[in-house]
Image 1: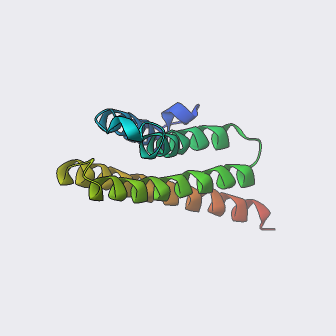
Image 2 (image 1 turned 90 degrees about the horizontal axis):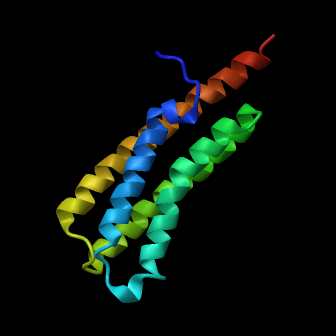
Length: 128
């Protein structure tokens, strides 16, 4: 595996940014009355994912990193829920939702893997 010098080197962060850009593009087509409602909520959740990955990576401790990855995971679950609601309201077509949910699933697996790796590193460091 290559060296990680920055959060920008993390594939999980890169995918989070891609998901965010997709959400912004999809929500451009939402009705005007949703600008401050579901559209805003979706965008905030999406932005929270890579932002918390970046913030956690910049923290001084692995426990803080895990905390921010947990927040990113929560934001991802919230985003998925809101995307499903947007589809049910007729704001998204099924194909766009399916594609985005596939990327969300990949992001979830990557976040879980990163969390496992950090937990393993913490437990290895505390062993005598």
